[in-house]
Image 1 (cartoon, helix red, strand yellow):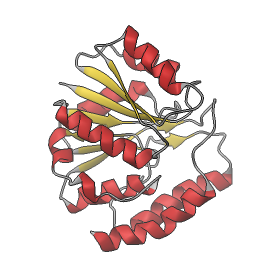
Image 2: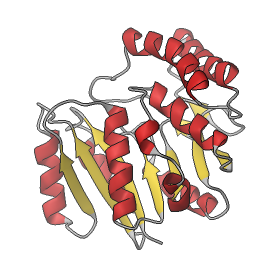
Image 3: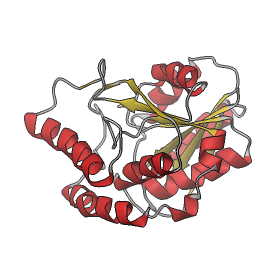
Image 4: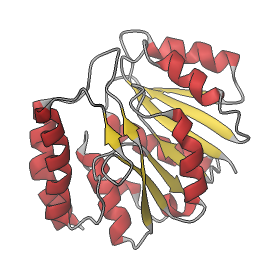
Length: 235
């Protein structure tokens, strides 16, 4: 099966080498990586190019001229994956909060479902034990709020570790997706549910990043609070 792992990056030069090393260590036939870099000032794009030169059959890099954000990167990556004939498309973060070693479990499940979601909140899922109570509350309540507003039938609406069947992504009009930042994750899942796609959650462990700065901010959080209402009305 041809699989493409889509990884948006912005200032992840400290994490990218370990992430790519762990993905390549899976030694899975047909597994490729697409890195989409938003012109990172820390040299992430250059680092990605160096890895692509050493592993041209497995790693590709897409450079964008400015910081356009997570949502635009994923949409562009999804289009690219479909054009290249990928049968399964994995999306994951570059900060090592998503374990590459979980990818085989996603691919095993995608043989039975349209969309597979890596969930922190189904039985067996968990978050970093060092998370503060406030962060746990914001993460859990944010997801529950999104599900309450939209009617999404999942436990973890905001997770960014997912796998899609080719036909599942082809059934979505990706031009319709307007959300930016983390609301993008909610909108895509809600769109999948409205299309009648079969969504399955599998447990993952979500560790905190060790290196680099988180992209989450209060602005992004509060934007997501009102945008989920727009998502509901839109679909």
